[in-house]
Structures are given as structure tokens and as C-alpha cells.
Picture (cartoon, rainbow, N blue to C red):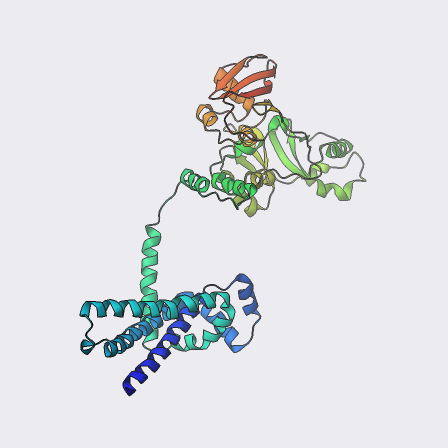
Length: 431
């Protein structure tokens, strides 16, 4: 009988050890960022030990798992001997029933007392529990045979991690976009979802798709007198303005308005061109994720976009790039007038120079129908001319899938206004 009492005491101690070790695993790996910040300012012995262990997460986890397995094996052995005493051969219970009873009772005890209950408590009191177990885990971390087994387990996991990394699954942006659409949750706002979609599509967007075309760019000729420059600065309202010599194809620099502030009282003979900064040129087909990296590296906010012949196509700014992720960024100086007008749920009026990428955003469509038909065009008017083979006259139209593009206004050079009618009224479009 004394042996059974000792066995119960040992079982109780082992269960407490299992509960503490399991709870420590949950506590250390569920610490919140606020609790981790609190630990940085904690100079107590336990606080420093917790920080030390958190800095070696793989070794910590290995020590916890090895200890927990040793304790659980011991619990199974002791529990089995206790059950054999009460339900042994002399008890008259069938061997199969006794085996099932052993498995059920031992599993239930381990799950409830050794896993579920301590982990629930430790998760809710993570910092307190982590400090409680910091000293024992630190001792076990350097105590043989735990320290020996720990080294083997960590090295083995590193090898598996490297192998798994090499065999990683490659996911295309289209697959990622589909996954994003499928996993859209009700508790995620529409704005947040659009930002995620912008990030997915970010790497597939060319500079040409987001740039401001040269006909819409406000720039200075280098032969202007200083008073004329000041007057145009007030009219344009920009902080950075390109300066060209002869034509816009020959941009010689960027004028930062802040550089002019100390010289506002100068006369018309002032050499304002001496303040020009070197322009940054990028090709039309450059991806905007690469452009963003170059903006960050070179610490510039504006680039001149050039075509294959070296002529200037337009300009692109850091704001243009960021708007592809977060949506339109406006300030108190931006013009509120939009380049489109919504007539009804299925009819819109656009300027011909509206970029196709903006056209897609307004209608909230992916634009695959247009992308499959377009060549070099990037504007709505250019798309119509490209596919019709000529500049359509007023009231002539071109149909792309369910979109009827009617020319509302044009001249001999370009299409000025386009009325877009959605033939399929059941199609979801932007409001």
C-alpha cells in the first residue's frame, strides 16, 4: 500500500511538472508586443531571464518539448503501474477492456491537467507565468542530457528548415489575387481590402500606366525671366517643376520651389537656372515597385519618363506610386474637379485623356477585356483610336465586351470626351 501512495505522490508531482512546462510554452510564445516592451524596462532577475530566453526561441522550444516528453513518458509509466494495481489480473477485468481503460484514463489526465488547463491559464497570464518558469527553464537549458538533446533537435530543425525553404511553393500574383478575393472577410473594411489588392497588383504595373502625360505636365522653358518664373509658380502651385530647353523632350533639370525662397526679392536678371537639380530619368516600361526602391535610394520624389527614342513622355512622382496602394491622395491644393461624370448607374462621361488604369478604378473592374485588346495605348481615347484605326467623329462608337464607348467630342488630333455605356446593367460597377 505504501508503494501505491508513493506512486500517487510521484504522479501528482509529474502532472504538476507537465502542467508547468506546457503552460510555459504557451506563455513564452503568446507574449503580446506590449508585454515584450514592458520586459525591456524590467531589470529584475526573472525579467532579464525571460528576455534572454526569448532571444533564443529555437533552443527554448527544444528544451520545453524535450522536458515535456520526458515528463509525459514518466506519467504514462507511473499511471500504468497504478492502474495495474487496481485492475490487474486478479481483478477479473478483461485484458482488452483494461488496455482501453489505461489509454482512456491516462490520455484524459494528460490532456486536461497536463495540456489544456495550464495552457489556457498561461495564455491569459503570459507575462506572470513566463517569469515563474524563467529560472527552471534556464537551468534545464544547460542541464545534461537536455542540453545535448536540445543541440541535436535544433540542428535537425535547421536542416529541415533549409530544405523546406529551397522547396518553397511559388505563387503567382494572379493566384494570390484570387486567394485574396476568396478569403475576403466581412470584418475587413473595403478600404483595407483595396489596399491589399493594390499591393498584389503593385509589381505588375508599369510607370507608363500611372505617369502624367507630357501634354498635362506644367513645366518651364529655360529662357524665362525670373519674374515670369515666379508668376508661373504661383499659377501652377507645385513644389517641383521640370525645366526644359527648346522642347519638353530636352528636360535639363528640376526646379525645387523651396530653393527659390531666399531669392524672391531678386530682379529679373537673377540666374534662377543655377538652382536646378539634376533630373532623374526612367523608361516607360519600368515596374513601379522597382521605381519606388530607386526613389528611396536616390531620395527623390519625381522622375522624367522617357520613351524608346529618348523623348520625354511625361513625369511620375512618389505620390503617383503610393496612390497605387492606398488610393488617391489629395491635399488642400489639389483640384477637386474629376475627369469623369456619372450620369446614371450604367452611363459615365470621361475625358479622352483619362488613363485606362484610372478608368478601371472608377468602374471597379479588373479591365481584362481592355488589356487583352490594347497595344501601346494607355488612355481611354487612345484605346478607341488604336482599335478603330482612326480618330472617330462625334457620336461614333466602339464596343468592347459590354462597354459601348461613344465619342462625345473630338477634333482632328484627338478624342476629347467619351461617353461609356454599360450594356449589361447587371454588371457590378462603382458607385
